Amino acid sequence: MATLLVALLTILSLVVVGIEAGQKVIISLLDSAIAKGADGTPPAYAYRPGFGDGVDNWHVYLETNNLELQCKGGGWCWNLEQCLGRAKIPLGSSAKLISTNNGSVPFQGMLDDNSTFNPDFHNWHVFKIFYCDGSSFMSDVEDVDPKHNLTYRGARIYDAMMDELLRIGMGNAKNAVRQISLTLYQDRSQSWINCIRNLMSCNLTEIEIMKDFRFTFINTLKSTIANSSSRRGYFVHNCYRHGHIEEIRGSTCSLIVGNGLANKNIAEAVGDWYFDRSEFQEMDMLNNLPRNCTGDDLPILEKKCSDYYIHHQMP
Ligand SMILES: *[C@@H]1O[C@H](CO)[C@@H](O)[C@H](O)[C@H]1NC(C)=O
Ligand SMILES: *[C@@H]1O[C@H](CO)[C@@H](O)[C@H](O)[C@H]1NC(C)=O
Ligand SMILES: *[C@@H]1O[C@H](CO)[C@@H](O)[C@H](O)[C@H]1NC(C)=O
Ligand SMILES: *[C@@H]1O[C@H](CO)[C@@H](O)[C@H](O)[C@H]1NC(C)=O
Ligand SMILES: *[C@@H]1O[C@H](CO)[C@@H](O)[C@H](O)[C@H]1NC(C)=O
Ligand SMILES: *[C@@H]1O[C@H](CO)[C@@H](O)[C@H](O)[C@H]1NC(C)=O
Image (cartoon, rainbow, N blue to C red; front, side, top):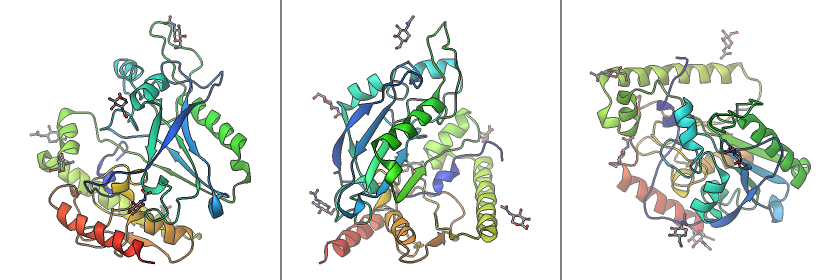
């Protein structure tokens, strides 16, 4: 199980087509002598100050893995060729990140400042740390690769960002939430890559691996929670989905189709847990395989999303 996988993402939610919004927030660079992206450019973040009764609360969003999108997230690089490749794109270069995005990025989902859409978190400070690293902020090599002019210093990006957060005021925070997304892969074989991109193409071995992973994951989670004295919340479902927190579709429309995680989406569940409105501890125990909730389930999901909006727009 060491390098497992995928199905994890799985533990996350869903998608609805046709809703786009979110304020644009300027990408800032952090000039620092020690922390540099893979190509030597400074690390980048986007920050929106909190307001109203959100001023003491911080949402720190740390990008890590996102296989599909070129402009954000980004997985790991596994060899020199891949690390060199990503140093030339937004995943390893803040210069490219800024030019590709024209200097700003939308804050959506749980980062959105729209109080109707995002009632619990809209006025929090949001500090989004871009990745610009191929190691989930874990590498720290002093020497620059002389032949390729590559740096491996993701951990320094992280440290420099924490200093910046304190500098701009998080030291005064009453509450802070940090969510980190992570994708684990079984391996990098073509067969596995095909499987995680299109569940229909997974073979029986891969399906068994996912089932096995789910079983281990759930049992470990239950055991961890049972052993813990503090109050934990969880939201575990089988939809195959990245980006719950920062995308409208992920966070607000992630109602689980057909099995109901208490009929709540992830933003509501986190809000209930965080603000002590009610405990939220739900897992999908009906489905033991990852499901592509962007496919056939879409009409049902859209209906649930529109019901959600109607509910939230009532006075
Ligand atoms: C190496 O990268 C740094 C930062 O981008 C740049 O200033 C320098 O000119 C590069 N050196 C070479 C030899 O390409
Ligand atoms: C950036 O601006 C160019 C030119 O206006 C446009 O074609 C492109 O779609 C923009 N990219 C983004 C991510 O907004
Ligand atoms: C805020 O969100 C609601 C619900 O999605 C939407 O109807 C409204 O147009 C949004 N307001 C703005 C200013 O985008
Ligand atoms: C099935 O998947 C496994 C794991 O990815 C892979 O090693 C194997 O080659 C695949 N079998 C076939 C017949 O494609
Ligand atoms: C899910 O379904 C959509 C729409 O049919 C498809 O484009 C996508 O590749 C599928 N994703 C997976 C992981 O199967
Ligand atoms: C929970 O506690 C039991 C009994 O002490 C132990 O066997 C088990 O490994 C613990 N589980 C975890 C995930 O720490």
